[in-house]
Image 1 (cartoon, rainbow, N blue to C red):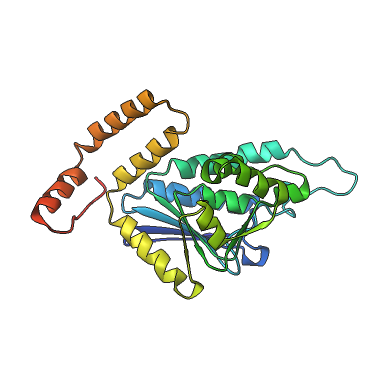
Image 2 (image 1 turned 180 degrees about the vertical axis):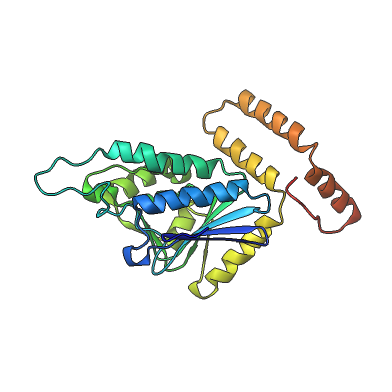
Length: 265
């Protein structure tokens, strides 16, 4: 597939989507939304894909919505366009697709992740960042509220006090502090960041894919399930996974004291 606003490739089980509008800090416009949807469809349909890495080109990960895009631009004196329509048409399906993708997802953040860009990273299963990276909930600076799932992710990850502080003040959160707060998984020095991302992706690509995705689903369900419902969900998941080829391989490898060779089946 040929794209202008993103780059996509899949090698050795690792699918990688790179947001590629570096001159605009990889901010979203309608064309990039459409290409990202197509790339996610490709990941979903490719049985060889075992993990998705989402990153950005140039100086940063993503600066959120491009305010010069015709979908949101308006002239002084004009009535602004319906931003709710934009969220429902573009950002909501994007977050739901990422949260339901058939492979685990990793956001590799360098530079700035701001606004919807920060929320996009948090929509992935794991977020790793370079030490120089930062996260900014920039919505309050233009009179908006966090979208792209940000208002859900923030309190779930860091608690209400910190979530409100980030959202109401719009201050830059350095990557190391984001990791300390539990907002993201890990921080790596800039010099080794690329190698660390590659190693993590390879590790996930060699893991039991279906089990990782069922784990994600169970963790998300726990946010609204009671204990009994969650125990029932766990039993259903164990029933399914206990009949999988990867479970058989995992047990055989454990008993033989060798490394397992998972296929994602």
